[in-house]
Length: 504
Image (tube, rainbow, N blue to C red):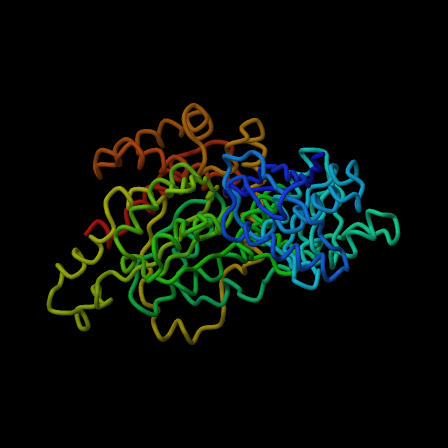
């Protein structure tokens, strides 16, 4: 007779239900696992056997066969230890079969029977809820999985606790969700001296989730501005926090099961590989673009990134998702992020300063910025020059709006967009608008339309650039609490499209 338990196999952030079947039949003693297991799953038989021995449970001298169904789905990871042990205990009639079949289980077994936390508890809980089952996981993963209210999560410290729970000896209480990590508001925009135009660009980018490129000499404040961007972004909604945390769960980045309402801020070094940025590796893990989902991807020294890495950003920026294709895996991850890039105007960094620039001016700047291809440059909604700050400005007291003031305006603009796109689930911000929706919401008045057409003809805007100007103009109008897009909104949007350092 076959006993069944259930677990999950991960394909990106999707957790697919796997049926773990166990049959104990007469024959030569053996313990085999079939169903396309990887090395970690195949080794589960030794961990399970030793863990049961530590509990004084001896395996019978029979043939034990574990089948992981569907058999054509690759099974990877040590989290199959616990469901294999459950199916085996049910086959030996130590645990009730009908109860075990109502649970989705995952967890790695130590040789002494204790349960070790594993990755992916949150998406596993989502899959269990969809199947109307409970989730059984290690104690260290319970706080993470308990954020899914639609299913009951049982978190055990050892296999012995699991046996005592399902035999009614010592029931385990349901797990409690982890803490919500507080948002960091220590970096204030008022600390940035000067750079009013760059601050304005930062506010517009935050309000509409527009991609931003900052070009300026070393030490002009580009990284300082980007570091204060999280302080003006609105907190994640409940749905956004859950989908972002699912990606971080797969990557093992959730701290003690806590979920943060702060938007992700990822800043990879310019030596990062394509697999680190886009995702990949043996198990097709999420990359920085996916870890920045619903948040910010800040790439400092942008032209210094390898050319092939920069070019792979083009498709994720447009579609909001990335497909990682490997010989043994085809995985799709969401990656709807805001790209903020910072660059020096040339290799030496002092192209605008005749006294400090190198002898190769202006070819130095052309060659350096030429590392960013035209199609990729066209995908930046906002491009702003960040000039050096004078010493007199550095001695002035802090001025301008604080991060709290800017964050309030950004939140109001985002609230307007949330209402605007309520009937369009694939759109959340102005940066997502396209087609008829974009034409209806961002159509400028007659003067604004005339200005936009003349600017497009004068500067040779592509169709993509034309539409990105419309999206930015709509965001500027939202910040201005204007129902219509007018000529001043279009003019400001065009001005951020064509900074002098790029045009020159």
